[in-house]
Every structure is written in C-alpha cells, then in structure tokens.
Length: 513
Image (tube, rainbow, N blue to C red):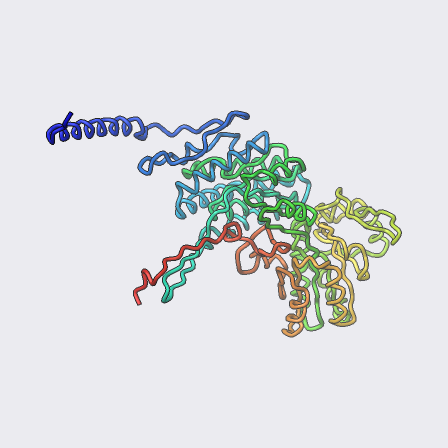
C-alpha cells in the first residue's frame, strides 16, 4: 500500500501532538512544589536512592538528597558514612563557592555564640585544660581558619593553548580527633573540609564524645539555617577502635585525616587511602646568651602554661645557656611560675609519672590521671598549700630527665643548663625525637636562629615568641589544629583536603596575544 505525501504529513503531525502532550504531563509531574522539600529518613538496612540528575532541566533538590539522623549523629559508622556521602553529592552538585562561604559564615557565627559553652562542656567531660584558654582556642579556629579563599585557580597560557588547574573535592573524608582539642579540631576540620567541597565523618575520642556530639549538631543546625544540606558533618554516637576500622575500610571514604599520636597515624597509613596525619610533638626551646631574657620568660610562660600544656605545639622543655640561666629562672618566677626544689620535684615525679622496669632501666610514662591538670592541683597533692592559682611548674634538671624526654602534656616545664649553643642544639634534637613538629628559639643572633632552624627541620619554628604564634595566636598566618608533619601537608587548610584537576584547551585556543 502506497503512502502519499498528504498521509505522511498527517502522521507526522499526530506524532508531534503526542510528544507535546507527553512532555506537558512530565513537566507538570516534575514541577517544583511550593512546599518545603522533604528530607529523606534513613532506615538501617533499607537502601537509599543515590543522587542522580533526572534531567538537565529538572535538577534534584540538594536538600532532598540528604538523609536524616540526630543532626549528624548516628548509631553506626555505616549510617554516618552513608549520610555524609549523600550530603556531599548534593553539596558538590548544587552549591557554588559563594554558597560554601555562606554556610561557613553561619558555622562561624553559631560557633562564636557557643564558644563559652563548648569550653565548659569540654573541661567538664574530659577534665583536661583550662576553661578560659579553651574559649580562646575555640575563638581562634572560628576566626582564623581560612575558607574558600585558599582555592586559587592556576592558569598556564602559551603558544600551545591554555591550561587551568583547579582544586576538586575528595568527597567523603574520615577524621579521627583527639581528646586534647576536641571541639577545636572538629570546627577547624569542618571549615577547611567544607571549603574544599567535601563532607566529613568524625570518629571522635571516646572521652570527649558528648561535647563533640554537641559540636557536630551545632554545625549541622548552622548549615541548615543557611540553606545547606544536613549531614555534611557526621559522627558515630559511640566511637571505638572498631568504628575507626570501619571508617578506614569504608569504600565511600576517599581520604583519612588523623590528629593525634604516631601509632594512630601509622595505622591509618595502612588503609591504602590518601592520609593526612598530625603526629606527636615534644617542642624544645633554646635560649642563648644574646636573648632578651625578660621577653623569653614571658613568652615561654605564656605558651607552656596555656591550656595546661596539652597543645602538641606548646613548649615542653627549655635548653638555656648557663650564663643566662639564673636570670631566665628568676624572670619566669616573676611571671608566676613555681620553681620546684629537689624534694618537691621527686614528689611531683612520683605523682605524675609511672614506669616499667626494663633491661635498660626504668621506662617512664605520664600518668593519664594528671595529663592536662592544673599546676595548682599538683602542688596541693604534694602538700604545697596556697598555690591554687599557679599555672606552671618549673624545675632544673639534666638533659636525660624523663620530664625532658617525654611529651608530658602537663604544666611542668624542665629547664636544662647548657655550656654553649652546640650542646643546646644537641640536647634539643634528642628531646625532639625527630618528630619535626615544633621548635623555638630566643636570640638576637640571626646566625644562631638560622642554624637551629635548619638543623631541627620542624614544621613550625618560632623566633623570639611563644610557639602559639606558629598557629596564628599572637602571630601572623592562618590557624589549624591538624599540623601534618608526618605526611608533609604542614599547616593544613582547604587546599590540603582537595585534589588537583587539570583542564587543557590545546592548539593555541583562547589566546588573545
């Protein structure tokens, strides 16, 4: 049967009519509702539909892609990762750089309002540090952790075309946080990681889980109030070593970040994933004969007594040239330090140290009962009354004393007299243990400062100031609570939590010269 031209035209018109009708029905069914988008509820064991763009013309709502928990807190690690995974997909697809900054601004503002509460909860739960100093630490990370301004695009233009290099999110990051700086590390990590376009799942220290829970929920509320998806920051309700293993092995976690000791960092490095590790430190201070002794005493006291010396970058031992040692000790006493005599030193050692007998002699350890405790409480425990306000204990010891060689995390500062700079550097290098974390020196001799800085090779080196200056507290530059010496990223920021991606336009395209 032959089909004429007129018949063909009628068939085409009918097909077009059907296509238009179907498109109208599809558009009506997919039109955005005026009601607020519904947030999916995650139920363990029930698969959640993964993020997808149904059509280039009808993007799926970012808020609708997240799953609900208790504002970021979940019963299991798998739930926490799944929620963060879906939230990050929505975040990357639906939020631009200026949107990231809006969310981060909300986190900063909410955190500042709650800085005192975070500090009080942290001290009450962990028993570590000083309330007034923790307020300052929380304010530091809220105000001086950089955001998206770190993400600078690199452009390379030449005869063969134009290439740009940009910073892309990793996706879901797993982060392990310490008991010493629980909320500060969470806030700092969240601002940096979200600036890079990621989400983060925390395995917090069990001894700080309640204050960390409050911090994570506070952050998620701040994000939602600013129009962002819930669960960009999540955590497991009851963190354990087992949940750390689950986090490390989860295929949806692309990067691991550990802030704490070297055993934890080494464990994460075995995961086969990209790892940023912040290890231990035992920062030495050298004071030479050219130093401004009054300034040295003031700055060392400030840094070593801050938050009961639980910061890994705080001054842990001092090596002073013997010709100025008496002046240094005198001026530190004037600042408020308490000088232990031999009898008191022995009592303090028995109080705050434990030891194991080994073939090589006693192997000392710090007592967990006294880590981060007030110096005044230590004095009271050995029978020295009326010193409850004391912030720092000092003692004159030899270079092989356990207080010199241990990372104490207590407000007890050993002072070692040295004959010359050679001896001071030698002992300082031994005490630093090759951590390459932090060191400082007080001197007016630029050659001496340069020599020690070159030999010690630390991530942070501070000249004539408290080591706090190395993270922007009384010094220039941005701050971080994840000082990645072992893995080389150093003072981490948003760029640390991104990967480079290159886009090239070849054959001379887009050049105007």
